[in-house]
Each structure stands twice: as C-alpha cells, then as structure tokens.
Length: 594
Image (cartoon, rainbow, N blue to C red; front, side, top):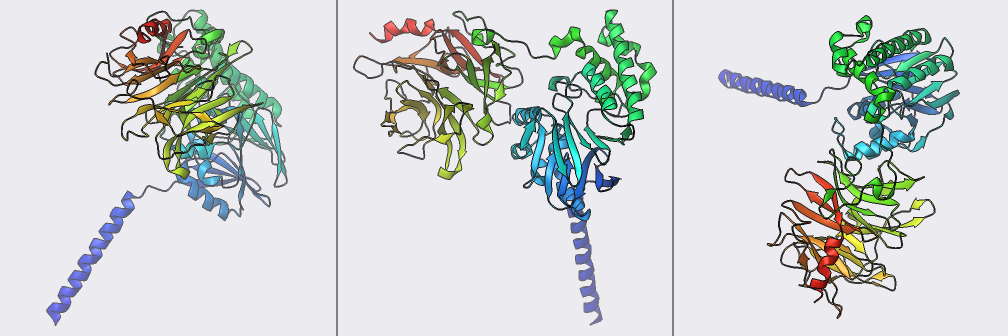
C-alpha cells in the first residue's frame, strides 16, 4: 500500500505543479492593469493619474459624476470602479479638453447616457482621424463612441453638484479645439494639454496650434483667474498662477530669441546647432521629442507670420476649386486640396450649380467616407466629412441634375442582409437630410456607383443576373417607384466586369470602366451612346489619350460638359482624381452613331 500511496502523492504533486505553471503562464499573457493614482484636490474633486501619464478629473456629488477627459480605453473599467469607490453615481457629464487619444479614448466605455461636451473642432478632428492615419490604432467603433453629444465655440456654464462650472474655449495655442474647465466655487481649473509645466510646450501646428497664440492664451489664464486658483494639467503635477508667470516669461523669451535669429536669416538647422535656447535648457525634456528645445525652435519658426503658408490652409477661389481647366492630356485634379498624398480619393463630382464638390476618401486600412467642399463667400471651404456619415457611412455618390437628391452606396445595411446598397438623401433648408434606402422590387443584389438621369432613372453596377460578375443596369423610376433593374445588354456589358457607370442627364451617353482584353492598362474607361432606336450602341474604349498603363476608372462628366473627371490607381496603389477636356468623348460620338 505504501508504494501505491507514494505514487498517488507524486501524481497529485505533479498535477499541482502543472496547474501552477498554467496559471502563471495565463497571468503573464494578461495585459497589465493600469496604475491609477487618486489624488483629492478639493472637497469631492479628484485627480485620477493614469499610468503616471495622463490626468483625468472627477467631480463627485449628489447630482452624479462630471468627468473631465476619459483617458485610455483600456483603463475605463478601473476608472468606473474608482468612481464607485468614491461614492459617485452615474456619470452625467463628460467634458473633453481636446481630441488627443489619451484624453478621449475612454469616451465609448464610460459615457453610458452621459452628455459629452467638446469644442466643435474636436468633433471634426475625431471624424477626420477616424478615417485616417492617427499614430495610435483606434477602432472605428471607438472613434464613433468618442464623438461629443454637444459642441460649442462660445463659453458654456453648467450648474452641477452645487458648483458653477465654466467651460471656456481657449484655442489657437496648443490646438484650435482646446477648452478649459473652471470649477468656480472650488477654485480649480483643468487645462488639458494647453501647457506642459516644467517643459517646452507641445503645439500642434497641423491642428491649428501656434506658438504666438499660446503666449497670448497663457497671458489670458493669468488675468482670468484669482491668485489662489489651482491649475490641473493633462500631464504632470498641478501648477499655480505664480508658476504660470514663470512659464509665460519662458515662452516670451524663447520666442523672441528665435525670432531674432530669423531676422538674421539663420536657418532652423543652424539655430539647433548653436543651441540658441541654452539659457532655457531646464525646460528641454528629452524623454519626449515634442518637448525638446529642438522641436520648440522649429515650432516657433513655423508659427511666425513669415512662415504661415507652411501651416495654414490655402485660400481657394473661383470655379472648379480654382483649378485651371485641363487640356487634352489628363492632369491630377486639385492636388494637395482634393487629391492628397496621405489619402486615396475617387468618385469626384460637382453639384449641378458647380458650387459644391463631393468625393470619396479613405486611408489604407480605413473606412471610405464621403467628403465635400463648397463655395462660400467666393471661397472654397476646407474639405470635410458629410454630416450623415456617422450614422449612415458610405461612398460612391451622385446628385440628381435638379440638385435636390443625393444618391450614394451605404455600407452594411444589416436589416436586409445587404452589404452594399443605394441610399438617397433629400436636400432641405439646412442641408442634406436623413438618408433612407430606395424603394425597390428586388433584394439581395450588390449595387455600387449610382448615377441618375434627369427623369430619375437610376444606373448602377451590380450582379443582379450575373452573380460574381458586375454589369451595368438601369432601374426606371415609374410612378415614384424604382422598377426591377434591367441589364443594358451585350453592346455595353461583356463577360468581364463593367463598373462605375456615369449617365448623362438626357440618357444619351454612358461612361464606365471595364477590364476587357483591349485595355491599355489594368482597366480602361469606355463610352456608349444611345442609338435612334433606343438601344445602346457598342461601347468603345476612350483610347490611350485618356487611358494609361494604370487602372483608369470611375468616369464622371462635369455638369457643364466641359471636363471628364476620373480616378486613377497607380502601380504603387496610390489613388487620385484626374481630369481632362471632355471633347475627347464627343469626338467619338459621330463614329459610334454611324
């Protein structure tokens, strides 16, 4: 019996060791929990320092919780637990000081039914880099969950937990979207990332920041608040009005030094080499490149009035976004305005009156969205994402020749099991309304790239009767209802893909792209004219003048008929808009109609 008992004990011991190893292995694979230090600032106002890096502020009281910034998404559950331990009820308000990831990523998990307040530009920034190339991966749902509920550009006052809370925009220094939060009765001000006590500031030039404006803003902080106020910053320890005076002196002195060097025609490289800010070296923090003397020199240089062209949006006037009309050879359309290096742009078209331009933009790995720019007060606005993209995302659009209806491809219409379908939006007094799907008789078809004629007939690419292969179809508008789509037939379609159709308002001409054997590149643009008997004539390649060795696709003619705008994908994968004189199309008309 003894040997058996000993054997059993050894087996139990072995299994115990194995179990311990498994647990240890599992624990090592679990992400480390965030370290959150809770510091009581005044009464029931607390600073939550996450991972010794970013500061959140929680105001706890009988009305619930008001949270200034939300930190990282990964630390949200711990923040919830801490707020509960502090006796806080539901989060009623979240105020975002600006749109940096480490200040808004927790919005999705923490907001619940809370009202989220932020500067109008904060929402715009979130919509921009939800699309985009922000340096920290940010799930698209997380971006949408971070969007503020209420935006503003003027001061807002809340009365909450017995205090008067003033939310004050103070923009143009760190970014063009910064707000500060003043708890008046408690004598506490949350500054977000407006300043970096003890280090050179971070000024985001590409987000509307400017070193000279920062000096003015810090001066305003000194004059706005009483001497005994406590400033809580986004990173680091608290600061005071007295310390703010020192910081203000540093800003003024260093900017003056750099500007004097500029007057002497010294380059940035030379300024850095000579270490012209050596007297202020204590503010240079090499831990982060953004807070070094070298970066601050460059920031001041680029913020100067003489260098504003480097950081300001160009003023664009005139028709066609100020572009000179193209000739008989394709040219890139609106480079650095619409066709950019950072993104992919395609499917561009003007509104019937030529005062609006719409296009699809996406970044590699991102979600395609519709963007627009419009001519206001004789100046084209900075391109922005269409307002209804939040709730009804999509791409590939067209406008009815009346200018009153906007058609586009909506993604993920889950209610009907269709991944791509055509939605329509109608224009009202304030702009575009709420998108809704078209009424139709057939479902289950993947529809892309709509184009609409004056009579409402809708043309698009799809695989209605040719599963797996796209053809060009037309759905006629009969008594306000779109009829079953019909295939345009073998003169237009082939055994290959036909996509991205454009129909002229009078339905006499269509353009599309295809991957046929006679292409000059990867795909080419074709044209077909309607014959006298109502049928479509044999489609013809537009030829090597328009088409190239690359992918040439998605043709659209400007409303005045002068230009053909199309998309081109280079071998590198870069996608931009191009345009060319549209007479290249009309020259083929007489040949095709014989």
